Length: 224
Image (cartoon, rainbow, N blue to C red; front, side, top):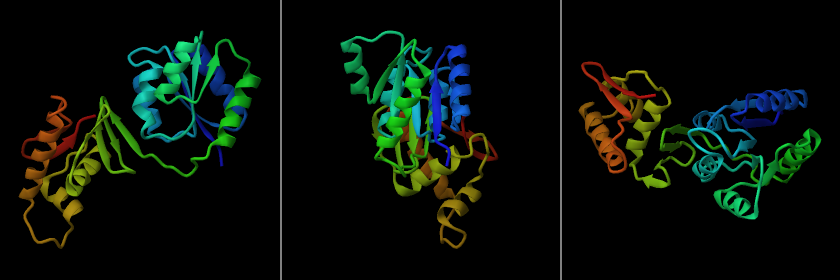
């Protein structure tokens, strides 16, 4: 089975070089030119991440902090220079190693292979979605705003899971009720509106950004 590597760097030449190199070595390669795209690619569960520290919008340290509680794979920082204080910050954020630019491809490949061999956390499938500062951990069935967990009931999380995994798709109350409560449940689809109200209220304690949009006369959808 191919190992999946995520290369996150805002320098196109480096991304092209590394992507070509690791593809030639039999890796499945994911790439990201900035922090936001790196978070989206992490949802595809890479086995190892090469993460540039200095990137636009979100730097590597912030990305590492955001994903480390949910992602168990090795994270190797790429950096042009490194001092002891920088190393401390990187390891504190959850990084596993540093690769200093310019680097030898042979050494980089050896480092990557070594981390994969030592990886003792195989089989952990962190099914994640990042929506700006909101993180949905489908494996643990948890919702987080930045590092704060937003406590949801089982049915509330079921609704978040259904809508967020189908962003932009409109679900009416009846369809949500059938999917979450079941076709044979005794009840009323109006309960869906109350659950969504509670979900919105809980998220609103942390941010005023709307994630679930009401499409009047149609239903609800998750905003991309």
